[in-house]
Amino acid sequence: MEITAGKHKALALLLDPEKADLSRLPITADARPDYIFVGGSTGGDTTAFVKTLKEKLSIFNFQFSIPIILFPGNAEQFSAEADAVLFLSLLSGNNPEYIVGQQIRSARRIRDSRVDCIPTAYILIDGGVETSTMRVTGTQPLPPSDLQTIVDTSIAAQLMGKQLIYLEAGSGALHPVPEEVIRAVRAAVSLPLIVGGGIRTPEQMNRAYQAGADIVVIGNHFESHPEQLEEFLTAKRSYSEAILQRSGLTAERSYSVSGPTAERSDDERFMRLALHEAERAYHAGEVPVGCVIVSGGQIIGRGHNLTETLHDVTAHAEIQAVTAAAQTLGAKYMPDATLYVTVEPCVMCAGAIGWSQIRRVVYGCPDEKRGFSRFAPRALHAKCSVTSGVLEQECRALMQQFFKQHR
Image (cartoon, rainbow, N blue to C red; front, side):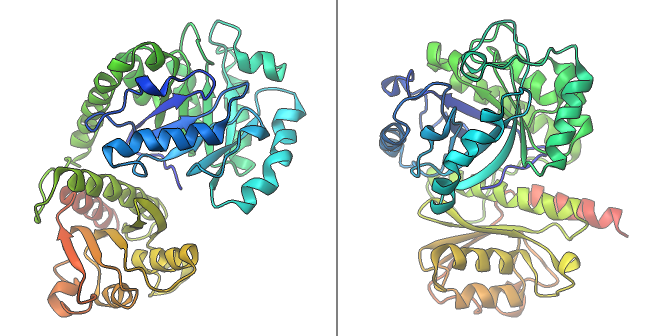
């Protein structure tokens, strides 16, 4: 699993296994957060909690379409039932037990599992109240006024190879991480930025996005007000659409192939993940094509264009994703998989997809010059279905923006 920085903002629901009441789970078919974080500072049976959570989500038939990411307080809170784990290092404190000690204790279990591990710098910012993290770790948060230390800590995290930065005001914080702190960190590092603690209104959430947060995490507030999740999600969508419109990337809402609403919703969700891959290619100077392969609602392979980086004309996004999926499955055939790609596959990629026996292909914008449908319409497996036009305008705009800058 990969979380990227960019225009597509995300909202994560934080559930503490010790406190969360799953009978009041605010998620519905129409109100789904982008991620569910599971964890707390003290304990709880994480494995049992995640299993129960999946059972609850299965009521809506999307138990795997919302990634469940562990946000552990210690090594004992790891569970192989989750999709990913934030491998946290508390860089704002001076307690080696939470910088590397707990990480050593959990390392072998995480390595031997199939759970994605995301190295994350955890930086506590004073939220005006003593938090459980402070009590458990015996550390003090950084004062918001000490911008230099906060920024230097974030820069150190990037130099150390962390993949995420998590700015945390703490559970029950009186006030959230200040916008000037988020803005200063965003200006200093290129890593995706998570912000949590003390956010109680959609306006505070959107201000965090505007300052540079990629993911906003809310836990305590939704425990007390579960009915407000839909209000926050509506505000987040409105903010994201306004940003896209200002960038010339209008959200696409029509599809060339009709189908059930749930399927269209999942197609858009996975295509956005493919767009994240395309954005990675864009920032690396590659033609911005991204791809993800999904089976059973889980991503089994992903990739983006690497032809310039690898000096290899075959290193297309689809080839990278098919190779990664084969390694995940330990098999070369993928009859239950769906491939999502931002641009119509070329003849070469269509051939690889066909040989892999992938049974469904979803792409964003057509490629009138090199697309397989014009030159090799029978290259895919005979039983493969094709859906086109998912987020077409966004996929096309990213390509146009790239070639405008490189011509």
